[in-house]
Each structure stands twice: as structure tokens, then as C-alpha cells.
Image 1: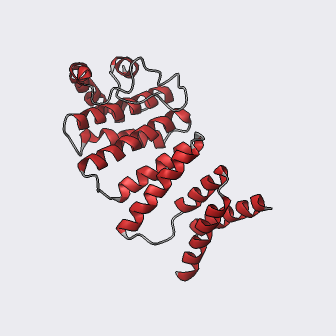
Image 2: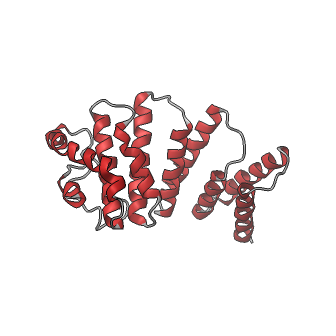
Image 3: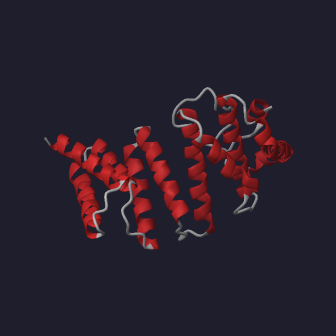
Length: 230
């Protein structure tokens, strides 16, 4: 049933960064296209019913779970296009839960699309909207882009998340800054990476030098940097 619905659903999702046999789709990247709405209207109740029954049928194959997560994400985006800004019948929440429970490029691709759509929805509410949920979306997208080798775009998203954090007033140590530094290293920006990491170490020292996994991640990244610097 999930496979049939996914094949019939007129997707608004962009093509995956990496080719995927599971998520192969005849129609993609049709966001805001009204031509797909009649079919969406016809199929949506069936997706909603499956979502309501999911706890009873969740013991299925990973491929079915990935397709269902993709279908939920796309159906939630369709609701947004029709004027809804929150809720989405719980589709986004269940899609994220499914993706985070599954390893692999296919679930990562759906999760990346989910986060990108979440970002678009936040920004459509208000171009100046800032919220840590939006910041988290930027971080997760940056990590996905780093894994895909799209380093320039990943760094742009990391920096956007840092701007949001600054505007909100969050100043404590964040492990995502170590990930940002590692991405900078992959791109060859060793001086910038060094500044990011040393600033984080100074922040840690100024707040009591409590040993945590977060600071350990920064020292690990700093060790990798020193190795690259020779």
C-alpha cells in the first residue's frame, strides 16, 4: 500500500542528492504546482489513515518505512502549500522519528528534505523568524551536505545556524561548532577552523572548564587540525 501511494503521489520533493532506487520517482520538484493538487486531494485521506494505523503496522521492511517517511514529508509540505503553518496532522513528527530510527543514505535523504521543508515553512511565516528549531534544521542540513561532499553549501548553513544562535542569545558551548570546524578542515580552511576551535576552548575555560563530551569533541577536532598543520 505504501509503495503504491508513493508511486502515485505527485511529489513536490527535489531529486535526492544521491541516486536512490527506493525513492525513485517519476515526478519531482513540483512545489507550488497547482496541477498536482486534485491528485493530492484524492490520495491524502489514504495517507492520513495509514499514519493513524502506523503503530499497528510499523513492523515492516526498512524500505517501506523510508518510503512512508518520504510520503509523510511530501504530504505535510502539500498541507503547507494549501495554507497550513503548523500541525500537519503529525506527519513531520512521524517522518522524523522513522528516519532517525533507520541508518543509511535513503533515510538521510528524506530527513534532509524534511529539514529543508521545515526551514522553508519557518521562513515563510516571517522572513526574520528565528527559533532554535530553525537553527537545528540548518545544522542537520549542513551535516547532510557535508556527508554528500557539498562543503561550500554546508558551511553556509553552519554559519546561518550560528547567526540564529547569536540572535537568540545562546552562548554556551555547542558540539555543532566542532562539526563546523571539521567541515572547514575538509575544505582546506585551516586558519578559520583553528579560530573556531580556539574560541570554543576559551569559552569553555571561561565557564568553569567542566569536562563534557562536547568539549571532548572540540579537542578531538583540534587534534585533527594539528595533525593537518603538521
